[in-house]
Image (tube, rainbow over all chains, first blue to last red; front, side):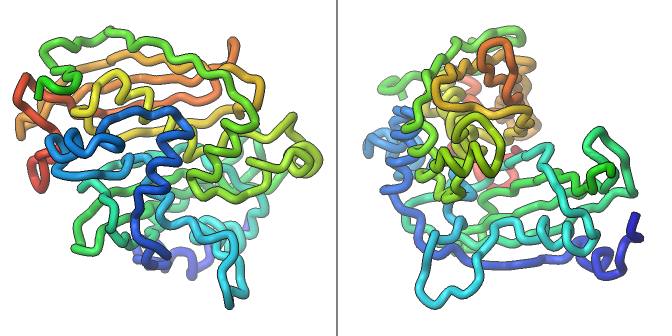
Length: 169
Length: 160
């Protein structure tokens, strides 16, 4: 298996692909998400409940990554934008053509509210030594995706464990 | 506070089971969930792509939409004062149209942290028939008693 490139070592712990959401957090998507899963939580539908409990409307916490998924099309865009770019960078740098995500943990901070414009960045936390699983030989890696609001408040962290591998020939 | 259902830590204990939630999945369930989460990838709306390119039996529910289903399942139980602190998912298989998703959950532990916040630790699953498709653990803040509101916590009073 390919040795760990120094370039990959240098990514560990760095703040990578910092970007701002393409649009403000808005209630239309909140309603559509709630409708999709028949979520009647009054925090998203009832202004009095939202005012009483959360000091105004909030977004469902599980929507945290929704605010960063790129539009399917945008004028003047020449390259397709990929969420979790570090994952794809690792596949290429380590010459591991296949990859699966094994675990996804989300930790929630300050509530996200309509009108927020969130910021995100990715941090490569670790890359394992070579491992052999039933999928093939490869390496595990952990990538954290951090989210904060326009006031610099932490709103959440997603942590992905991926396994990049090469199929046994 | 009495205007809305309130589940307090006084009334929750390890071993409590959450009511089952059963959902019949249609193609609309899958497509609506994918578009609501801005996931435009074709395996979540294009039957031919899913079957011919991905080699699966049909379009399938995407991961962010599964997260939304689990959130709904948890807050159906806790009521609006329940505040998610942390969730971990492990996806093992896919959910397709004509499947019936069944969500189940159990309280593993109830604890109070050093800031006085009450936490329920839950073990959840999403099954189709005999097959467990996704497992999930959640750490959810719930009011310690009437009058407490986890949503009012911030800074060092919020330790998810």
